[in-house]
Image (cartoon, rainbow, N blue to C red; front, side, top):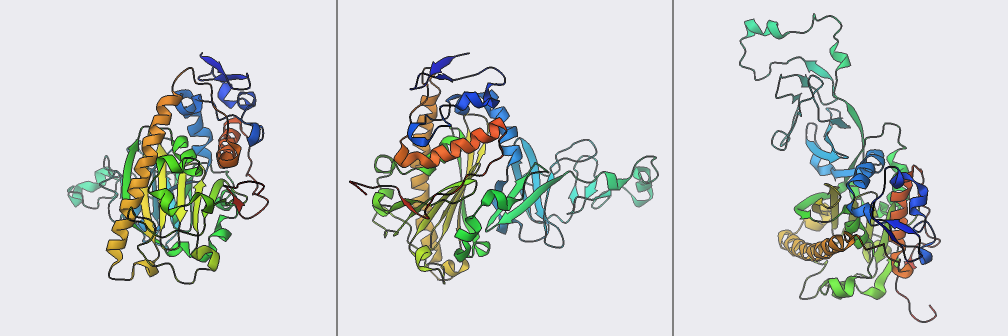
Length: 432
């Protein structure tokens, strides 16, 4: 075991013996108020053991966003998701209700759908191995059901299991997973006993009520393979301390003086930019008209939310940008970026040109972020790095997020409270 010390002289492991990652004492220097706190221990970003525990205690016990509602707006449309190492099927049944299942046949555990078989609408889910078939509510219909089979009708009886003793198809439906939605996002939760999604969302539905998010649709999708822990991507998203040095283009349309912390009770961190600056030659957030009917505050602001555990949501008056970060080991994240709009904003003939401009700008900004977080991953893997000191003025959201992770690792069920005021200035000078 390699042991360093944090800046307060307390033990700060880069790696730890079994049990240390679920021990409250391991995190004592991160549990203090942000003005005194050190960062989450380095092993949280590099250790396979931490990653394995985190997968079960964070991702298998949280509402995790896995896609957009427009992907499953019709019965039989499918999202294939990977959460905590489990492959999942998310769909809608014939009544339009969200359903989710483990992507495992109840016969001999064959993976039912892959990326090819999930394309389009699946009115039945059929195992490719022995043709066991399920409906969109997960009920076992046939063992097998010979839709599309080349077995002659007079021989199909050989495969009929209806007279097998001790077997009832009703006992062999797909293994269910809880599913829900908010706005334009679809969520799953592997924990059958977890609190409803609304507890994790906190006050976000009220904060975004004026945007009519359920009506927004995905217009562009990009993917990135990132050589960094998902938490580093999130922590980079949560703070604007790095803007002047990492984002020379973004800082022109997102002025430091216009940034505020914007968070209430809920499993999220939030910030706000207001007023929104106009585009420069390098690009920006203009390009599409805003949603009609927005209130004055929403019409002039960009809202930036990191939704625990691994989803970034940016909502502006004319479009939204979402990042789904799927951990793939302690040092790699598979990232899907989505640009969404309300139909109001893409009704014009020049909508494609506006979307092209937004896609170029977001791709530029995101690649700048990913380059720097990969460098952080390289540095944090140095066994002599003991952890750093929080910059309290700018990094309260990181402290909030890291303590959400710690809560789950040590078994504490808690939703953070909100700030005392709706918007707290991030950058102040003098006696302000």
